[in-house]
Amino acid sequence: MDLDWSSPAMRADVIDMIRWWRQRGVDGFRLDVINLISKAPGLPDGAPAIGAATGFTGLEHYFHGPRLHEHLRQLRAEGFDDPDCVAIGETPAIGLEMSKLMVGDDRGELDMVFNFDQLENDGKTRWDEYRYDLRQLKAYYTRWQAELGDGFWMSLFFDNHDNPRMVSKVDPRPEHRVAVAKLLAMIQFTLRGTPFLYQGQEIGAVNQRFAGLADLRDVESLNLAAELAAEGTGPVDVFTRILAGTRDHARVPMAWDASHAGGFTTGEPWLPGDGSHASVNVAAQTGDPASVLEWHRRLIALRRASRTLVYGTTVTERSPRGVWRYRRADEQGEWLVVLNLTDRTQRARRPLPPWEFVMGSGPLSARALAPYEAQLWRRRR
Image 1 (cartoon, one colour):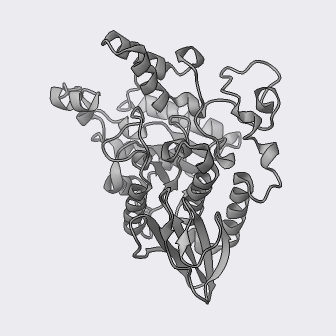
Image 2 (cartoon, helix red, strand yellow; image 1 turned 180 degrees about the vertical axis):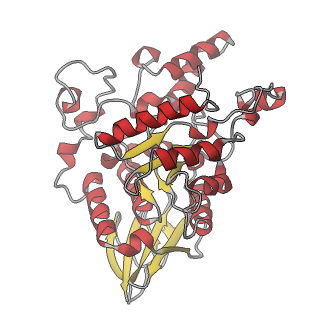
Image 3 (cartoon, one colour; image 1 turned 135 degrees about the vertical axis):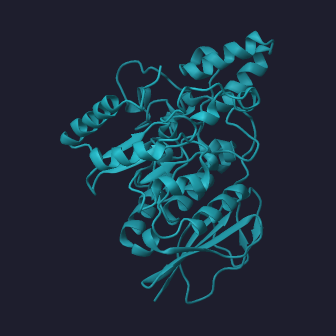
């Protein structure tokens, strides 16, 4: 079932719905797969080869349809016509140049887009069981930060309701959970753009240890499992693949404390989870300066207090492949971020004065970075 966006009456109804919500105080909107709303006239058949490669026959006729920008401009002009109203498009796989066409200040369309390219390594999907290489994330954000200059704005996110937990994708070993969670947060809150936190990310939530398909509720996962079984895939291999990519990892109730259902409800939750909420929860981390939660709170406070961390330019420095160093700078000051993107100790010299150490996730060393260590330095002007 789809909406006919070529119909003026349908578009008017959507705009009325937007304004209905705005009148009730809603000023932020996420537009689901919004780049798919414009279809080629006549609904021509798709190329079989493209359909086989992507799993979506006809995608070439609606992925970036002929009236997409016209429809987005109408939504902005008639629905999101308030400078305090934010419109964010979910636009998977559209890439950098197409993103610019949707979020440029002079385009009159969207404020930001959610592009999911950063969530998987090249050639991988979320259904693949693999260890995410953060060095590719370095290359991705280095390019986007360099090419999205003034007049464009990007979203910064990792976890969301459609993907497993990023911490587990990078390194599922429990001993690295805190370090990886802090490193990802450092990236989100020190790059140019708007950070988005998804429930549980601020406490370093990880993938669930589901025991079998009966523990899952995600219809996408259950449908894929049925398809794989029908193709002759064995039950162990089916569950291994589903466990790698199920959305239910991020859909368990938020863990507020160690009580039943994490304090989310006194009843029975729709998705119980594996009991990890007993040790990873908000109450246990509140007030603990070494916790992932307090790390997030400190980063948020620093960002709110610094115009440079919000609007400054991003300059990536030369560094070994496993290390990422970048600066945020403007006329008010300068910040330096130093990251170890690997699970091995990396050689790295400590910045010299006038750089001042602000915060870090590991033992501060003169010549090395601990696995997944994240450091933040400041130089005043």
